[in-house]
Image 1: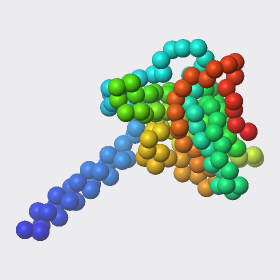
Image 2: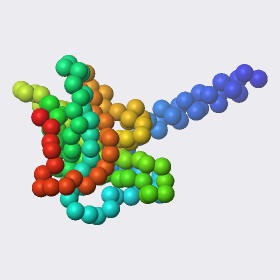
Image 3: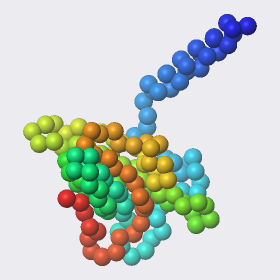
Image 4: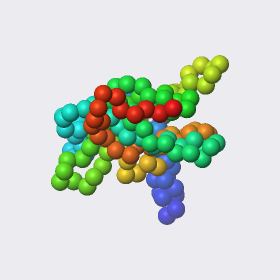
Length: 152
């Protein structure tokens, strides 16, 4: 009786391991997974992701805006927001941003730390794993004015 259960468990485990090693697409589209997600409605200003960064060494947090399609600095990190989506008004509030985070330590080659979707409602679902910095998405919005505030 135990042999079939063990065989099923091993088959599932092996399938999960193979699924994790297969290459992932460059930028997955959460729109197909959630029909409620859409780009920020057009309006005055520039599409931005509001992010919060934590410097673990100084224990300081900082909120900053990262324009979609541009690179923003936080400490030694270069953060590029490729897309920023929000839920339709009828659905529960949610903001989702596709981030690429590269660490540019002085005297070292740039190191890609993160590339993927971050969800404002569940920051631990896909988080940046770094010894000095934490970055999370707070919202997607339109920044008013000529230049949104940037970090350090």
